[in-house]
Image (cartoon, rainbow, N blue to C red; front, side, top):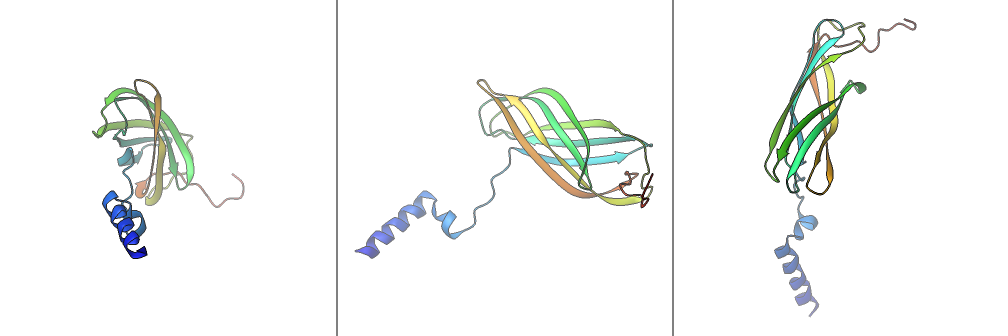
Length: 160
């Protein structure tokens, strides 16, 4: 009798999809915001350009994106931040690409003249509004890129 109950419970779990959590690894859910096509270019001293694409796939009803808040991290150090204001309607389950391109201005200092690997990270939020509430979908992205002209963090000097 115990065996029959055990088999019945196992068949219920298998048909409802609960068995995947016990026996097999399930795929990670798709994040609502994906970051791609990140390009960081350093120009003359104290200037750079950042561009990336935030692809938003809302999980809820009609969503109007009102801004993208982002932070740029280089080699694990906070480097820049910005807010890109927009008004783009997004439909549930339909991916929408938000291309972002912005100039960066920073205090001039020593730079790496040759092309060097730099850990580039972006994190932030896509902020928007549904019919009844505001929403905030987060994103995070990190990759090592080969960049010329990036700032030097450690000059090897004890005092400037």
